[in-house]
Length: 323
Image 1 (spheres, one colour):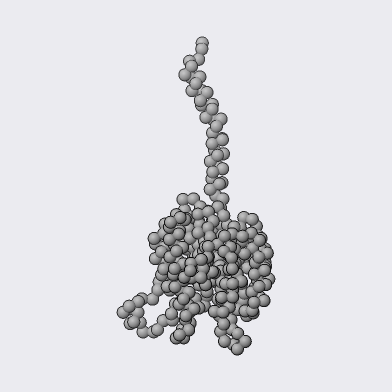
Image 2: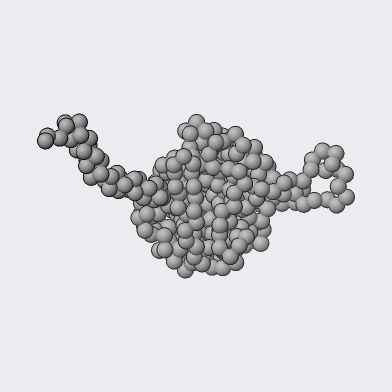
């Protein structure tokens, strides 16, 4: 007795589906593996103002020399007790130029704010300008492998602020902003804050531009590097009449303007906003704290690497932390 043709066809289809099932499963597993892999990785080295930095920086750059690291950000190049002279600045620049991965320097307060001349008078602004000449003369990173940087100094109005730079990796916009520790170099004495005030204007322009770019380019995240901690979750002191009625005067917060601007801009941005600084981490190891789409990673004096995963949303994971 012959088997009906429809039965034969159904049996053949069933056999084909059973044979292909393992292949479909393998394809799904491969897709999951692909999704689980980080899109890229970056390293950030926190500043230790209390220590000499030479050996520490050499070790940190050696530890982050793998090709999987897209770039390394250094939040500072020297300790506060080290020389402010050109000789040290040039030695550190040469060290960074020999690094295997692209190196971007985000200046720290110990690099320039405490510098004094032979008469023991402050020459912080002169030293800051010298660092700009030595470290940011070209719109590119330091290191054996270069990446292009777009600097704020390309804007005629802010030609001095070459240390503020941005670059993009995949769908993440990265940027440095000069916000040093020690209250953003705000000086309480009257008539001494011209540097702070001028830099605040430049930083306000810079932040507006960065968020506008991130929105226009549909970036999945904006990551900002600075030495000083903006403290994005902090609630500022009351203004107006409530502020005047406070019994005790409150010390001026040098980061308040930047913090308020970042908080306001983050609300209007669909992606993540991650602030990376050299403040002491809250726990034993640096970890990212999130509130809504706004995050903070304080690395202290440690060197950390961060995995970046992009998909429906950006995700950041601290994968390594070293002294």
